[in-house]
Image 1 (cartoon, rainbow, N blue to C red):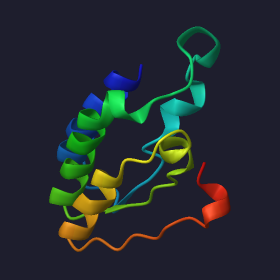
Image 2 (cartoon, rainbow, N blue to C red):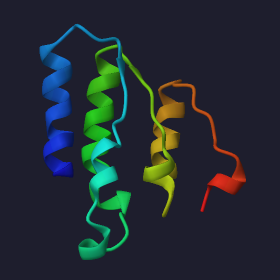
Image 3 (cartoon, rainbow, N blue to C red):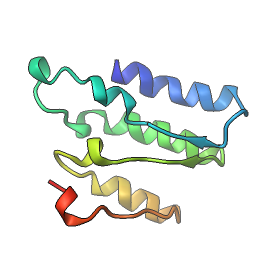
Length: 99
């Protein structure tokens, strides 16, 4: 389900101009089958997230992102670094929120 969602994002961005901000890129993670699959590991889907975020950025849209689900197990500092390289402002959650 997560791969299908991530693969749809570039098509949605390319096929519509009715929105300026993309939100909830982490939405399908809410339904991650943890009992069957174990804890969600964002590294497994990193390239899919990168491709989706690249499409959003290249379209000139903003990306609102609550990273709690993506960063809850292991942060992907390379994604934060990529955002910084593109001069995309980011904020870091308080240390208590990072596990």
